[in-house]
Length: 474
Image 1: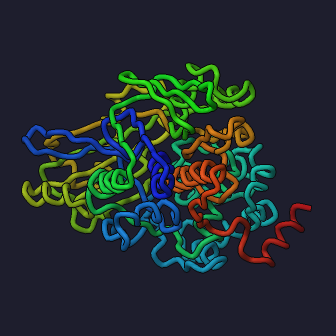
Image 2: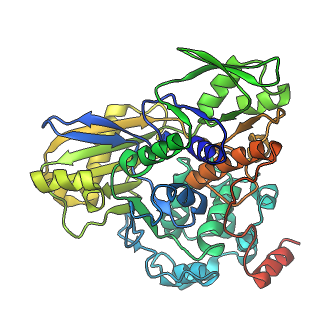
Image 3: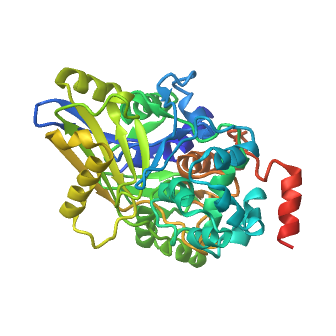
């Protein structure tokens, strides 16, 4: 979000200073160096991210330094495996709406004729007329879990398809707003023709994405200050702001706040002159999703050659997905080729806050043995475990209370995936889009044309289905 805002502003001649608390760029898609026990230098991160092809604005940001997106590579499928043995994928699903949703149901072994007949088509109709922001007025008051119950969505298909969406928000379906689930269904199934296939970076995040972009904004005159947390922001008498870090203080005309939920709450609580009371209360109510665990294991022998680069899982305890990094990342591929091993990453989302970390790490490793039995014989050369709890939660009824890009002060704007947007975007794409929107809000005041934004349609693409949905809802 911060890099998107900085890019759009710097390109148009604005003098930009980008403050980053961490010693690396990229936020929750950043990476940092580490050294393995065998002496190898490696890059650690918070784990796998799918760069979906509907991420038009994020991909536009990356094209600044990689016009052909050659630093990304596509994985052949989005495979899903349930503990019962049921497998699903999206490679053969039609990509033209509405045949994409129909094709998934007809091709998926998770759906039987009896399952399809038992579903409530009237309850499912809101999925065919997702309009932003209207979908929040209709569905934000119920949970994703209760919505799927009302639709009588088949249990296996729920785990293999819709829980993939809810887990992308690092939240249990009982805690997630049904509006966010419906929006994801619209983005990937009925609003676009790209489907659920995605790309991944060929190199670790810093090399493939953020270091080149940092160089780009610096060539446009921006100053990038990593390892520099902002301690305080105060309105200045001239109408601007004074920003204080742990090392200096300086004046600025305008400010973009691109922080995670906890960071934004903390900064606004310390800076009691920002915004007005209702805005500050909305920020104070922001919630964080439950903790998640990323375990990266450097194994002394390879996983089976037919294992996919990425596998979504359900019904294997807390294990949500497995990545085999050497299938696409050059750094991991070099290590695997030299040692004969594999670099495997395990994710567990929405872990109970009270869970014992060492126990959960061992359980996750045990579930890997269930899914890929050949790993039982592998020794762990080294391991890194990242426990984090800083992703935004989109709870039932929470949409209206989330901050928007604009604040009570036109010179103060907010960006990030936690921001309420009236565009059909989510996850990394919401971060990039709101970063551009924040820059546009400032540029508008100076009479400068901003960044053009692209999204999937802001309503269902099929007029007949929209009409049917409106009829069904009365």
